[in-house]
Amino acid sequence: MPDAASPIAAPPKASAAKTPAPRDTQRIFSIAELAREFAITARTIRFYEDEGLLKPRRQGLTRLYSAGDRTKLSWILRGKRLGFSLAEIKELLDLYGVDRTGVQQMRELLRRSRLHIADLERKRRDLDAQIGEFKDVEAHVAAELKQRGVNPESD
Image (tube, rainbow, N blue to C red; front, side, top):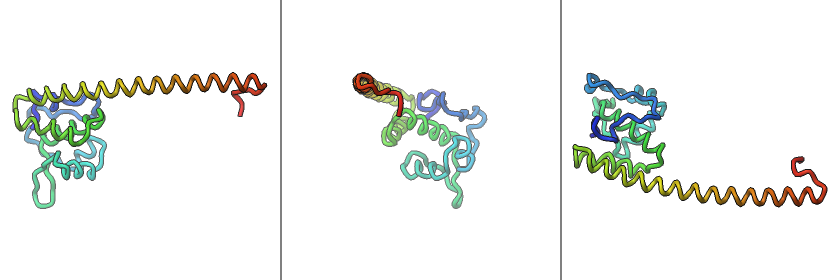
């Protein structure tokens, strides 16, 4: 499970959630509390549980989420915002169980982040090229309309 030394456990900057203070490590959260805090539905949290990303304790039918579960949920949501698949997020979280120092996790996060950056930069180049082509079409059509005595800005 992530801890404060792990980049996966670091609180996401874009999240409204706050990492519990050290004295709160024993705090238990209900599904409703986490849903409210992270502005998601309880169904979303149960989905992450079904996918094996969260493993709350149970007391009867009640799910009891630890501070570690809360941290994992924070990172699941950040990973999704960054474009990681749930499978990638699970693999990154699972690495902490293999190496509690977090080094393997950090290396893999770095590798995957670089892959995502390269993919996004390629997509940005593709989009810039497509925008350039549309601007060429726009200029050509506007000039043709003007040549025909039609105002290109009117409907």
